[in-house]
Image (tube, rainbow, N blue to C red; front, side, top):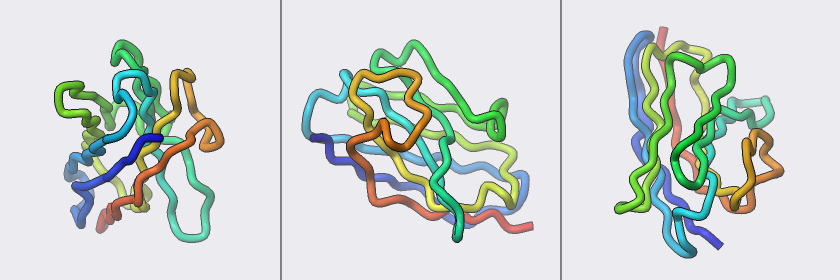
Length: 124
């Protein structure tokens, strides 16, 4: 089991940027695909992006391609979601998940461990 803690959410204006962090502890971090999902009120949890266990591959939802970037820092057991050019429709609770060595891990059911989530609000 992997314990995950997200941070970095907040309120930002349209066009602004935020960087979310996901700190992992527990089993070996480097062996896990790490993903980001988001959930807006009344909607299902949706895939945002993921990074492979070695960090060599990333995949993103079409809605965030070119605006969001995922990276990971193995020495700190942390991965990051850099969000640029934010839009009001990006408003949601953002969750970090760990999916073993599965790839591309674009569905929520692939993930066994989740963080508590961090709120991102983009004002128009």
